[in-house]
Image (cartoon, rainbow, N blue to C red):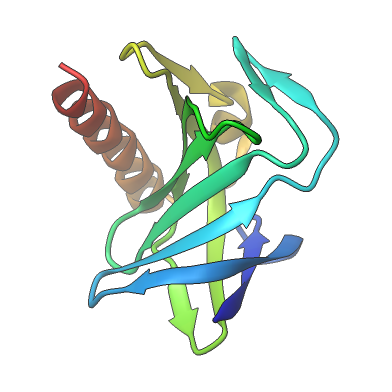
Length: 149
């Protein structure tokens, strides 16, 4: 089954839409497979290449989502790209999330890089949302530190 993924900015305005294949639907999360459809680009030491396979996990009660990134061809793990965001909203046939700019890049060796701190600081967010976003970043950092020991 195919599903539409809609990324919105912090105000909910759509900034990107693409399709993926629904792999799993649980009570608290949705897992989708999608392929990178933009031009090649570098994020720190991670090369994103058109056609890379993403296994994307969206949570309906957590303030983040993350994408496990694999090379195509070869299916070798490149790392994880994590978005701090409002919890995802699932409706049949679509997932939508509101991005809060703050991102975490995790490499297979366990190295972590926080991205877009300045962009996050510039957002007009109320203190509760800002605090929730920083808490989500800390949760992601702890989860991946444990996972990749």
